[in-house]
Length: 236
Image (cartoon, rainbow, N blue to C red):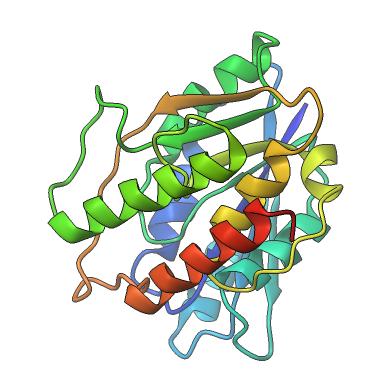
């Protein structure tokens, strides 16, 4: 079984090699092996140099590097990665180290045990380290998750999480449109409508960044998320 790890990256020269190093070192539960696909969304810094340097120093690693010639957004980078993925399952790993790849196996367990088709890694289920940052971000996340649940009839605790693990054939069967952070509510709404879908949630750690440290999502993305929840929740 192959797990495709999709890593969208925009101006992540400071962290991308550390992310790749952690991805290289993790030992996945049997029977899983991994491939890594990095999508550089037209970074203005030295992200490309950092990835290619790591690639040259680790020729044994199944690492694919793709680049957008024009900045398109995280969602667009994910679409590119999904198309290139060869795995039986697909997971998203941000390049900023807010999430720990060592916890992939937590998400894989419900898959291996035959319980799940999709697994979300929740930052809010408890039991894992969680950096304390912004009160209003926390409220915003909970409100967006609540609104998403109303439209999808799910009971997720963290719709906006980066850590989403999908059965590849189900994910590739969706028509995804959102090119920025609207990907999260869109994919949640569309995956929820698949007949017989089995969605699980597990608790994961969260090592959030401040804006000074490179965090990119902002209030405009929150308004877009609300729009996407309504649009795709109503079948758009």
